[in-house]
Image 1 (cartoon, rainbow, N blue to C red):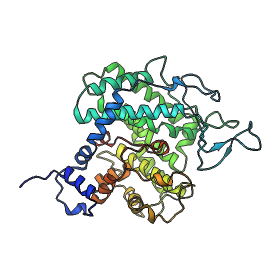
Image 2: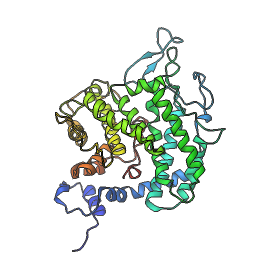
Image 3: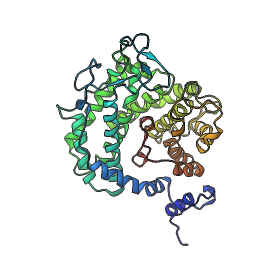
Amino acid sequence: MRRVNYGAFYLCIVMAGLCISWTDLAIDMSYETQAMQILRKQILQQAEWAMQQQPLTVTAAQSTRSSGGKHDFFSEGDYWWPDPADPDGPYIQKDGMTNPENFVAHRKAMIRFSQIVGALASAYRLTKDEKYVMHALEHLKAWFVNPETLMNPNLLYAQAIKGRFTGRGIGIIDTIHLMEVAQGVLVMESATVFPSDLRKYIKAWFTDYLQWLTHHPYGKDEMNAENNHGTCWTMQVASFARLVGDEQLLEFCRERYKTVLLPNQMAQNGSFPRELKRTKPYGYSLFNLDAMVMLCQIASDTSDNLWDFQLVDGRSIKKGMAFMYPYIKDKRSWPYAKDVMYWDNWPVAQPALLFCAQAFKEGNWFVTWTQLDHAPKVEEVVRNLPIRNPVIWFR
């Protein structure tokens, strides 16, 4: 029987705009293989860009509003603005409305770091060319080892609010962009050019950060957040724990998903009511679903498969994806309020679509993922897309 190149065939389907059910095709490739074929050109282009980039860490820019030092990450609450009645006084909140004057240099540097390492690790996984690893090492050294440029392993000064807080637990969400760095290390660490001592230093940094995340009051506050912040805390802890081999923390994250996140955040219909109440209900619903899906992808193992877990009333991650899928496929059918900002920029190629398609063999979810933007450029979208290099996350 002649084999068909389904990667190329599927691309022809998308380009032609034909409506063909994936379940009608005799697929002989895994979703991982198909995703790699679809993204290959983009990955190699992004890696070529990454190879030209020099390290840039938190030490490259400082804000006079930061209470921290040169090596401390600093960011400001997105939705906080000067008070027109008291311009020099404490900021006031405008939920959903991002203040363009906030200090974002450290956040941008971390996102850039994530993009670089994610691109290089993806290219290495595709090609096994260790030149990508060699260049990634320079960035990893700058952030985690070099005493002149490293970042301190805490977020004491993240999402500060002028006149109110020098930092907040809510700022921990900023380090979701270190997840693809951690995963990139896992993908690349077996390369012959990856020094064992550097691996040790990097894992020591993440071990210290995990200690801070799980013991500092900011970390505990974020862990107990009842919306996407609590989800993202657990997702991050699982990602970093997997890098350093902390099985106890991984088990904690699994139990938290099953006993706290899913039962307290998901409604019977699969929606996330706390996200729907926000001024950006569509974007926040996508974001929280992506985070829960990635937690399942990261923390599941052969003895505790979160993909298969469901509450006694039937709520599960599959139900969450099934609720959101029609509105990803056709946003015009969204029955709730439109987001006050960036409504036109969502959805993109949400990782929830890809990994749920793989877990549940849902071909239509996969096809929809293929048809969406895999390289968004809008800063707000990039900031709220925790996973941009999916090929390094397949297990």
